[in-house]
Image (tube, rainbow, N blue to C red; front, side, top):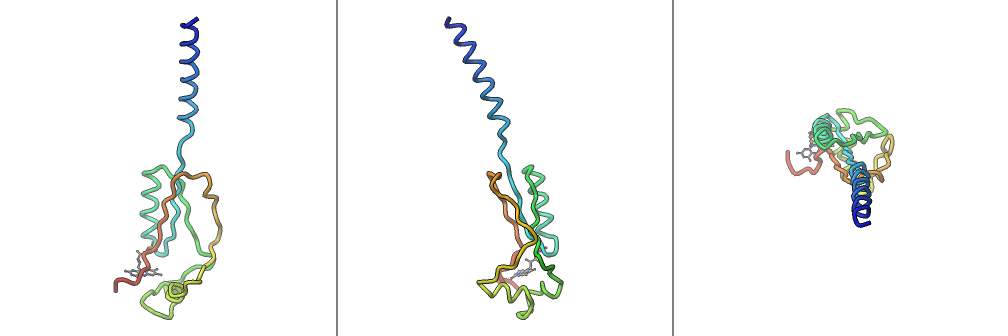
Length: 113
Ligand SMILES: Cc1cc2nc3c(=O)[nH]c(=O)nc-3n(C[C@H](O)[C@H](O)[C@H](O)COP(=O)(O)O)c2cc1C
């Protein structure tokens, strides 16, 4: 009787281990890149972490003129100085299935230059 119980317990533990192994954690790398540097880093992180890659794209494309952060009148300068600015994006993604999310963006703090 004891032997049977031990055997059954072992079988149950084996299947439980299989189920646990199948539930892999999912990782998302979400990024916004205007000129490609963040994209390169995001792709590398996604490759290393075996993550899903999501590029956050603006609804309205940023031109080189828009991106001139040294010009206080450029579109991005105005957006950065407006705390209420929420530029729309092309599409959202469902983040619920992910356990870990990396977020990458352009460095835009005006602390250099
Ligand atoms: C809108 C915008 C604002 C930026 N502001 C700054 C800044 O304040 N200080 C700085 O050192 N670099 C600034 N940069 C330069 C970016 O950090 C740098 O070009 C970065 O590589 C851009 O990333 P990306 O190639 O993924 O777009 C800015 C770039 C953009 C597009």
